[in-house]
Image (cartoon, rainbow, N blue to C red; front, side, top):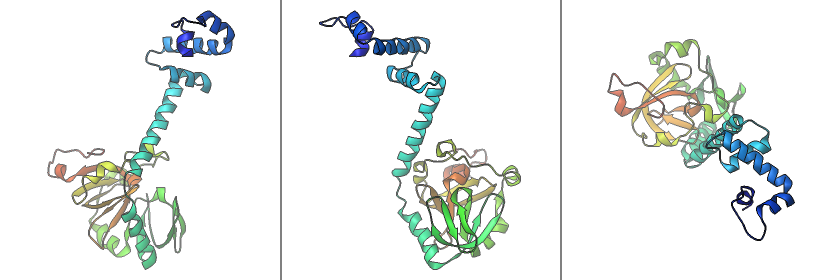
Length: 244
């Protein structure tokens, strides 16, 4: 209602000019917001007040708003995916004290996982390992058989891609598009150049499980740079793409 009064659109018991006189500061803010809206077509009244209150430029405010919306979208997407199977897999490794090969960007750590913290794996001999640095993880015995036959992207092998700290800035943060491909063969290119072509077993909120039962390969979504599904693997001209 004050917005329409400030613009002079309403007449009634309290005339617009009287309202503006009695509410001078509020009227001034409305004038400033309407000026911003005039200079920036498409800017809403709410966003105009947001710009005014934040002290940011219109471009800065809208960029911040977009980032906030992207973060909220990622959080919502993750919440729609069941993480029980991934948690059970990791817990099974912990309880069995299985010797694992944890592949990082430029090296591989051979160790057991003793516990899991929100942002780290706690290893038996090496201590805490930040989850964000993990590219893939599998049993040591499986890694020794898999490693000699791995395909690799030469550029990424030479210089692994960095991982953005903000999930909304990563190539893959939303796990939902992967759900349709469970049980299918998929091709993943990881940030250190490793390329995997395996059945997709389980999709979790933050991670994928690939491979056969008892020989699973754990891949965090943040480690992915390219993904393609089974239907594009038979097409030599198909380019792996995000969420394809």
